[in-house]
Image (cartoon, rainbow, N blue to C red; front, side, top):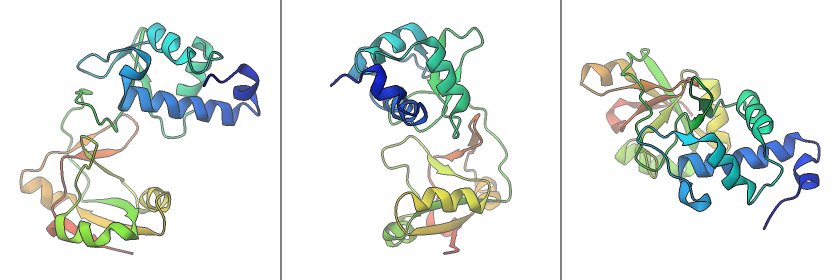
Length: 192
């Protein structure tokens, strides 16, 4: 079902949010839906993305895409240096290497989730589920906000320093999200 310009410009913010969510789906999980491919580092050709998204959202043009990237409150996307390619910064369920260097984490990190997942987390630790990495926050406030999106929040303190000493590898995405493959339960302390 195509969305026309009037649908997407209604108050512009909601239209941009709707298109941004669709771009996120394409760049993180399902590029084949619009007939594009990502390179091994997650980059997509900007013109091909606009043309593919245009089948569903004909209003999308280069200026709107730039506005979506610039104003996204989670900084989900990045352009390459010459602006010809775009990618999601993290959250992929498809195998890509977004070229993040290993980074020394702070002493502690946080993870927010819904309380209904606590029994599984406390038994198995944090697992990436359908994503490539577990996502962690540098502050409790952000973790609480993330956890609230899924229901009543549960907040975990992650002993990142101890994990790092044990050989776990951490990355920090360009938008500040901390990533690691798993967080075993022994490194978690439930705060709420």
